[in-house]
Image (tube, rainbow, N blue to C red):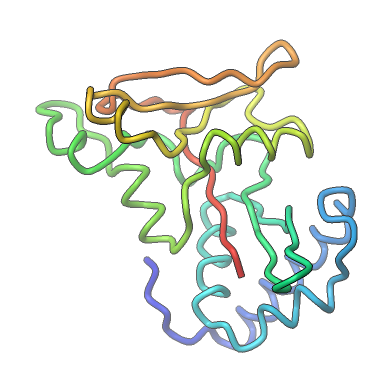
Length: 187
């Protein structure tokens, strides 16, 4: 999925137009940076454009959530209200997928993130995203799980309920129709 073949001009224009509309509609997510600076980071960056296209196609609604003034780098994150619809019903990683004997999901969150060209959110990043709005009020999202938890067969996921952000655990082999994952991309 993360092959970096050249996008057609029409695909590129459509993606940039969607990103610009979302950027302008949600200025509170990225105060202090203008669209021209974001566009400059994307120009000529085929890998970033492909990753953003993948985020968009899977329902992530990527938007800028951070800007490093020193380097100029911008961070895009999935800002869809609920966990991206095209990334649900996945167990946590390949090891968990291989361990399932029956009712295997179609894939794993860790592998799909890599294929999309994005990183899964950490707990801190997920909590940071939640300061910009209310996300996952009906769904949940796998997050990058620390090695000590993963080594014991667990994985972490988050959601927002009752006005609070919660972090939970599950066995890595579990999967649910309402659980996906959110990702980010630094450009």
